[in-house]
Length: 639
Image (tube, rainbow, N blue to C red; front, side, top):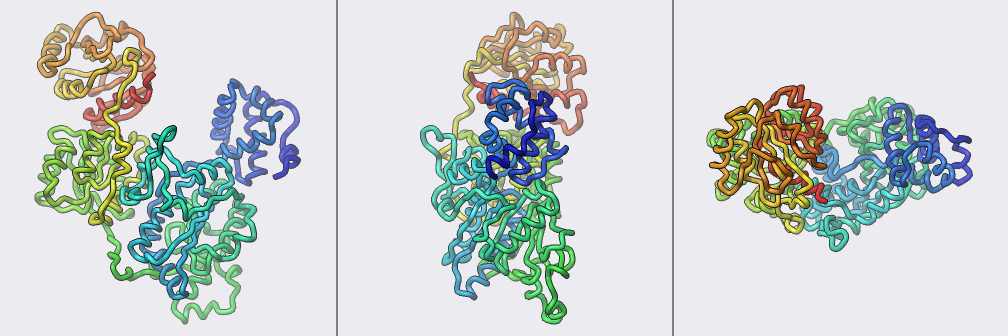
């Protein structure tokens, strides 16, 4: 859009009201990018505007509106970038990759070979910062290496945001994000960065060279693209920003770019139904041109439509192709799709087990056939039952996940995927699990976001099973491995631990995990009274290398203070606090804890709701995860 057009979009006058500013910037961005920014997006727009003016050292919307108008051209570009960038990650919506594996790629390759062609062409039409394009590159490269090594592929990635396209071209991502990729696709495709990007991973030429990225507005597709050259088009999770007429316009352009036998993928939550487009649904938000499907139907049925205008008579909900008929028989050397994978889930968190049951459902191709709360229970279960896969936690009582793998490393086990609160970068634990035979690793998120991680969990389990006999390379994971988090400036940090006598064994085990240099730890016991000395003696006997004090609390590194919970108000102040709660403290103590303004509050997962703790907790986890997660919290905030 030209400068004059952009300037004409702005309203005259200075608005001090944030609502007016939100409306003004939304209108400008909508006129440039075509996306719809209404009441539903109002909070998001305000948040990103506020983040922008904070970066500029401003404090109010009123300050920013003057700056925005004085720099309308450049700031419009900035806000287009901020407001069109959507959340993305590697291997998003695994159902689409499964369809590629079982149906689309075998079908397309067979047709290509008949025509004497050897190049697959893919378009990631809303590629954001490149994760989708690189996911496709890893996936197609891996597929072709096994089933059609004589073929090559090209991927074209486009996005309206220049900054996102720049990021995609660079091909450098935080290793934390790259960890989402299943291990078998990581192999040979990523390298550890050096110097200023040593905490980042770089895409190797193996997956980068087939990709080309350009800035493009989907409402203004160049004619050079609309020639039916793309075998696969991914345009996912972008239609939510457009109205029905714009979606119809964009889809018509995509269909012109799609090859006659190609596949168009929209977001799982997006549908083209009701738009009267010449497409037919062949999978979850997966479409083909109606005429290509008609050609594949039995002759009598296809002949009925002979001579008809497909756009006038066929809609996305009118003609349906038989699901998976295109590749109903797998190519030679390729195993048939597994209809249902049976999973044993091993974790000492009842809540995590409950959520895994919600994620690993029959409609997603999984069935949780057993659960266990530690390694010994898992061993007993496997003596009389069978599973295709296992999930395994590291921190568990009686027998940890690491001990289970050490015990069974020479025995036949189903493929094991670790799901734990320990970062994959912890060389002493996570990497050891992979070296002992675990197929892959998922860093356990908070309970609030575990459902959002369902794609990663399902994809890693699916590929752990499919590639269980394929050699894997974990060298890139090893290159990023770190020792246990190092806590800097412990004198500026503290732990406040709430525990009762019933949790004394769990408490002692947790305190034993803390390694110097550590922040001061204050253990508070409700209604302890005179029994506090007996409690101190018990902890001292369990922790011979540590000193347990009951008086004069100070923020002295490595010190452990034990006292009645009524001393909470007398604890010395501290700017960085982690609270660890065993059991269920009283409402009055919870109120007092809330006054500490802690950056982290870990609450014991007991498989039940705790209403008085829900607003206070930052995470609900097994107590076996307390020590590591607290260490990691302090390491991230080291000064």
